[in-house]
Image 1 (tube, rainbow, N blue to C red):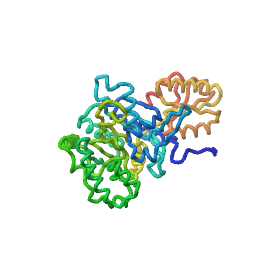
Image 2: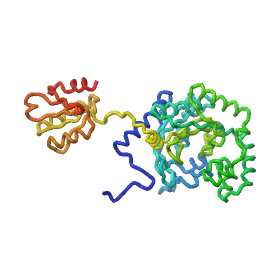
Image 3: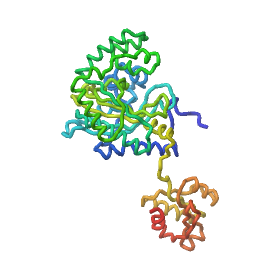
Image 4: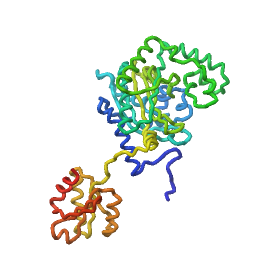
Length: 420
């Protein structure tokens, strides 16, 4: 056993389970690729200020969970704890918003890092697929992203998830609500840190998961009662578009999410089979984030869906994805001449797009056929000196056990016909 192990709170993706993660990433990104979203990839670390400004100084992510480091050049960096701020920074840096085609629609996939207490569904290193529509204030964009996420989950076969929806208002109506909420919170029996948080961003207190806090929040003023007419109309249009698309959702007046940059539409996808870590994804509108990080006014909306938690949701529902076989053909060679010949044929099959593997290590027939079985290949190509003397190889169906002699030069066509 190795002296080293993966750091606490992290995991290794290894076959065959890793194939499920790849399939989930592909399923989530497919609706985005079909809807005008282009792929973007950002560095795994950014300037600390990008997240402290954008995500919020009062959030647990910035105050407790962010991995930070100081380089030899005295740059203060952080491993990215989320994707939106990085993607928006990259779009601004590349001036994508000045190319005359707004919104800029981007999707991404990658690893993120937060120092959290490890439990099922919560890791210090985790994977997400995300989408951002930058530079347009349109309820149809909010609805589009919610519908695309719903489509992705349903394409995987998931059914036991719910969509929670709320509006957080904007810079016009939220300050009035903020004042009312702060007045309510000041009258509660809260610890010093929570009271401090209430003064910086009182909405964050509504997101506190502690039962002792939640009990006291009964009767707290609700943001929905303070929305201005423009925000009410915007939210009703989002709801109407989602409903018309046949996507079911639930209104949740207490949904605030854990990042400071959200405005107006906010939503979360939760799954009943994941216990306390029930959120599998979420997002919302962030109309002021660009200005927070030094850019122009660019109203935007986006989401991130957790790959890890989506896999756990699939397992909770007992769903096994129909994954393509890793190997279609496995070559078993007996003797040096057969090794050279079949290795050449494996290379030919691969060049023609057929997944093929080879029995390495000079094993005998019995050991090599065990490798063929373990590979999951549909067919084995077996050859020895006698076969080659006759100009043939044996093509064996690993499912039925049927075997036929095929001319060496006709192997590619025979395999193609069998796989068709």
